Image (cartoon, rainbow, N blue to C red; front, side):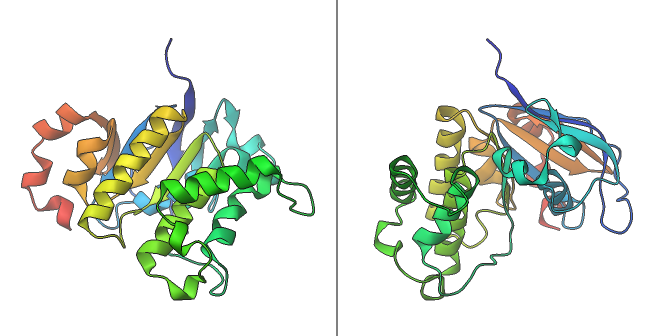
Length: 242
């Protein structure tokens, strides 16, 4: 049985105040996909993630999440379909890591944000998965940017959305922590039937674990297998460093 389609993009145009000089995007992604979004700075990686997450509106075209046109999903329900971790960490400084992660359960709790035992159990499981037990009750102001980043990613995991979008999730991590995180994302995509799309400048490391590569190059976004990407010798040029 084929994996269920999570994301279907049709003739999507993206941009902020004007449309980017990028060909209309038409791509699909499925459950269990771990996809690395690669491209030079300024080519539209963050703009695409912001569009798919609902932070900004499409400049043209549309996309579906789990068969639902995003334009028809009520704002209060979008957090059941997609979770997003931006590259900039923006959270209340005196909030603890545990409370930050627990925000991911808000779409499923009642109006008083009352967590049930299953919510608390999931939160603790994800805290353990990301090795944050010793830091869980510390304020965000007392931990490193890398630890905050891991907590933000953990929050997206407890949100239990079919689509997870991450903008530069390895940015604040050291080499070994980057490797560990990418392996954890691969395991989550496979075992929890999620679709994870993330941008990354650590191209060689990301390509090792990813199922697919979405490459923005020469004014278009194309999907490549790992073999196709390696045959391009992209890593042997200076383009990916710009």
